[in-house]
Amino acid sequence: MSPKALKRREQAAVETTAASGHGLRDWLIGTLGMMAAAPLIGLFAGFFLLFGGIFLGVAWQMAMKPLVDMRQYAAFTASTSGHIVESWAAIDFDPANLPAGKLYWDRASKISRCAVVEYTAGEWGAPLRRAFCGMRLQFSDNFRLSDWAEAVQEGIPFTFLRDASGFEVQEVRMSRATLDWISHHSPRDTFGMSKPPPTTALAALREQFDVPVDVAVLSWTHAVPDFPLRFDPQRPQEAMPARVVDDSHDWNPTAAVLALLLAVPGFWVWRMGVRAFFPTEPSAPVLWALTLLPLLALPWWGEMLPKIIARANRDWATIASGMLDDVTRSTRLIASAPDEAEFAHGERLVWRLDQGAYSDTFGRIHYTQPEPMPKSTEEAIAALRTQTSAQVRTFDSAQRLALFRRLRGQYEANLRNVQRLFTTAAEDTLRDAGADAAAHKAARNFLIFAGGSPYYDDQLDKIEVPPRATNASSE
Image 1 (cartoon, rainbow, N blue to C red):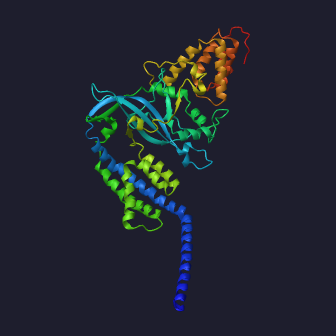
Image 2 (cartoon, helix red, strand yellow):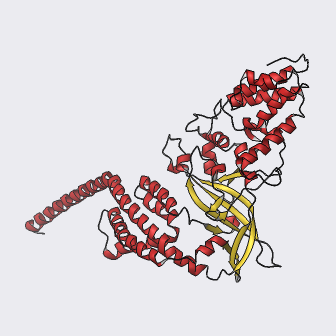
């Protein structure tokens, strides 16, 4: 090889090495730059995906979903009436979505109602079962199942199963991961809770739903509802609530115009979000594919959109979930086979009114649902007080002493849901000359310090009769 050729070869090797070095440097700089910019890119992409997705979701709810429902339920011409055989509230919480060290699991959770309905689709047919899970609401530490409207969805009945006293047996189901998390973490806040306060989020949840009087009043003022259904005679196993089928006939063409006004800008904002998500310019066919393919999930947008946005930014995904729950609150209904319902086989927590924190006060009284049913809260409370007083009158002095002391102790420990049912029983004890002095004093102190209404010594002096003599120790 000539000296000139050798020199050119050495020079080319040097240039190749330099180019390789520059390429590696450029790649490292580009990679590090993308890593640094990723949060900002995710923030902007998530913002566009959020609002574009919300516009598209609202447009679907207004125009396309009613059309799909109208076509789907056109053949649902047969009617029947079912009854609820299983029901629960499903709490959806993913511990992975909660930042490390944070305890506000309830605020990161959603709750919905599910019911399994049994019905017959023909005079001689075997009973069929269908599950329905309705609207999702934001959960919180002041949420009460007894405050929730008695419906899976508007116009679709719901009730928990009842016990022998006619009281609802409230039930919550969740994933194993959720139960493990709340079993091993402290409550976020114990202000206003019992003393001593619960030490785990699970114990706090049990206390949160332990409101016997509220549940009793709700149960006695709301009859167990029938569950009207419509079904296609060719597919009776796919029955739907009558309200859903009836509403599907009311499609309004005006909604299509409004939906179009949302869908057009929503689509372009969505496309901007998809484009912003990719730092390098994809080819036009790839970009259109990435834009359009996720839109095939519009019928399941409430579940899918937050998952898509979470790829860009978790905070925007949380906002999207809440907004879509509001959008679909009156229309969300997931029908399925019973085994496929939300947390159908999840971990179960059950609240029975004769158990829990009030088992030795409220739980000692055996209630019977009155006939006819009370028409108002006031009538239900009056019936509960009457039955409470009648049974406490059968207690001996020692039993009354223990009961009224316990009621006062619960009141002082911030367990104050049941005391109002025992005020008449305490007044009757003061009027009972057969009760001893210790029972009288316990009843008087309960009324003054824990009765929930203002009672004064001079007022109680007027109704109290001298108790029988006793050697029992006073309070």
